[in-house]
Length: 179
Image (cartoon, rainbow, N blue to C red):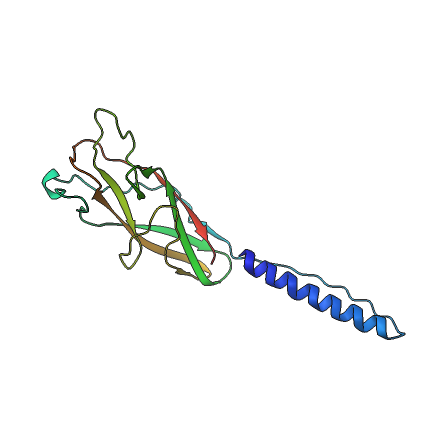
């Protein structure tokens, strides 16, 4: 979005200098009034969908035996309502506390406490099943005027052994990026 604003500004400055030079070379005067209204893309999370819980379910410890093993994929959606067309679409950046030994994954809440699960983190994926590291942009999703549904998924992923059982919750937020 910043790149577009800068390009428009540079184009505007170029035009003003061109008119100024043309006026200075002639004896007549002209007055130009320019008004620029910039309406950048704006999408809001659809009402009543701002907060979601995604249950990854109860997973048998035997499914997560080796580093890199993952639980079954659990789909979830982000619902947007866009006021203006976003020709380049939108990207999503997930934020949260990264796992200490795998910063691309979400750390579990309460990690290091007696009752919490350990040895795993939560991996996030885009609509094609491509991993989205924390703090990095997803692939672009179309976001036309009106409501859009952006599909994602999440999975537990083994970071290190041993894996211990217990509550395995994490918290993430997201940002909407206009490429």
